[in-house]
Length: 345
Length: 268
Image 1 (cartoon, rainbow over the protein chains, first blue to last red):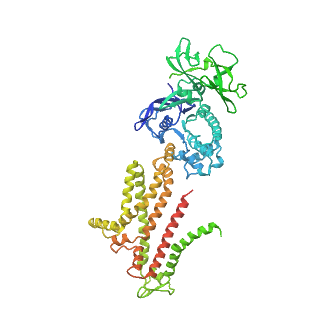
Image 2 (image 1 turned 45 degrees about the vertical axis):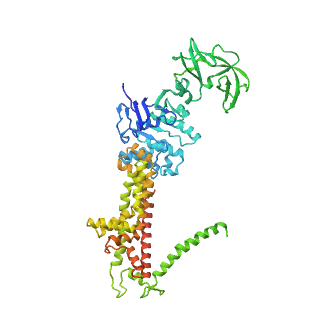
C-alpha cells in the first residue's frame, strides 16, 4: 500500500492512566488531505488519542504511522505534526509575529525565510495588522487565528486541533468552522480535529470517528454515521433518536408500536431500533407499512421547527412549524423502513 | 468631609504614627549629636555622616573601615540573594513534581527551621562549622545567611512553579523547541514574578542581618547590621546609629530600584 504525505494510521493503540484504561486498542486513519474529526463525550479518550499522535503522550501499546513512517517513539519536537491547543497556549511574552515564528526559529530557519513565511501565514489568517501585538491584547477569535498561523507556518504534514473552538462564543464558533473548512480545502492538508460538539464534527469533516469509553464506536462520512447509526450510543450522541425495543420475527420486528419493517434484517433476537425525529412523517391515512396511530401529547415550538411528542411511545417527531397538527390531535404516523435502523446492541 | 475621607483618616493616622513619625525621628536623630554619656544633644551636625564616610571623630583622619562594612553588606546580601534564588529554583520544581503528601512534608521541612529561634539555629551552625574547621569566617557567614533566608526565596518561587501552565511547555515541544528554548520561552517567563519576589524578600532582610555575621563571622566579618546594633547597644551613640540606618535604607531602596528597573526592561 502506498502512503501519501500526511496520511496517519493509528494501529491498536492502548493507554491507561494508573489503573484506568483510557484507550482500548484503538485503530483509525486519516487520509492525505482529509479532514477527520474525533468526536465523543468528555472522558471518551479522544484527547489522549490526539496527544499520542502529537507525541505529548506515549502509547502503552500499538503503533502510530505518519506518511508511512513509524513515529510511535518519536518525541513531540521531532514529529512533522503541529497542534492548535485548546486554550491556544500562546507565549504571553512574545509578540504575534514571534509566536508564529517560534517553530521556524526552533528549527533554525534563516531569518529572511522566517520573515517571509511568517508574513505569509499572518496574511493567510488576516493577522497582518496584529503582528506586533501581544497575546493579552487579542480577542479570543484573534488568539485562535494566531494559534492556527503558529501551527500552519511550519507546514506540518498533519495539523492537530484539540477542541480549538471551545473557548469561543457560539456565533464566532459557527464562523470559525467555515473558515477552518475553507482553510483546509485551500491548503489541501490533513486536519485531525478533536471535539465534543457533534454539530462541529458534522459540519467540518470529511469523516468522523465517534469515540466512546476508549473505543471507536463508529466511523464514516458524517451523513452516513448520522443517518445509519449502528449503536445506541451513536444514535443518541449524534442528534436525537427514538429508540424502540423489539423482538425479531419473520419479515419484521415486533415492538410496542406493532410490527415494523426495518432497513436491514436484525442479527439479534432481542434488540433496539432507531429512527430520527425528522424522519417520522405525519400522513393523512394509514401507510402501506410501519404505520402507527398516535395522539399529539405535547408540542414545543423551536423557531425553525416544532418538536412533537406522541403517544404511544413517546415518539419524538420534528415537524415544520406550519404543520396544522395541534396538541390532542389523533394522527397517522409513518416510520419509513429505509430510515428505521437496526442497532447492534 | 466625605465618608471615604473619614475612613481613610484611620489608616493615615496609623501610617503617620507608626511609620512616618519614627522615620522622621530617625532622620532628625541622624543630624544630632551624642553626649559623653550617650544622651542626645539636639545640635545640628553633619558629623555622623562624616564619620560614616570614614573620617575619624578625633583627628579627622580617613579610614575605609565604615565604607568597607557598607560595601561588604551589599556584597553579602547580593550573593546571599543569588545563592538562595539559585538553590530554590530547582528545589521548587523538585517539590512541585512530588505527590501531594510528599509535597506537604517537604515544604514542612523547609519551614520547620524557620520556626526555631534564629540565635539557637545559628549557634547550631557554629557547632557544626567549628567541627568542620570552617568557623569563623566569610564562608560560615554565607552558610548562615543562605540557610536563614532560603525559605523566603523558596516559597514565592514554589508558588509560581506550582501554578505553572504546562500547556506552554507542550506548545514549545510541539514547535520543535530544544530544552533550552523550552526553558527560556515556556518556563522562565512564567516564573519571573516569583523570582523577583524571592529576590526582594531575601535581599531586604539580608541587608539588615546582624545575628548571623555576629555569631558566625567571629567579630571579623561585620556587616552594617552589626554596626547599627553596636551604636544602639554597647556604644550608645544613637545619632550615629540613625545615620548608619539611614544609609542602609538608602542602599536597600537603591537595590530594589535597580531590580525593578531591570524587571521593567525584561518585560515586553
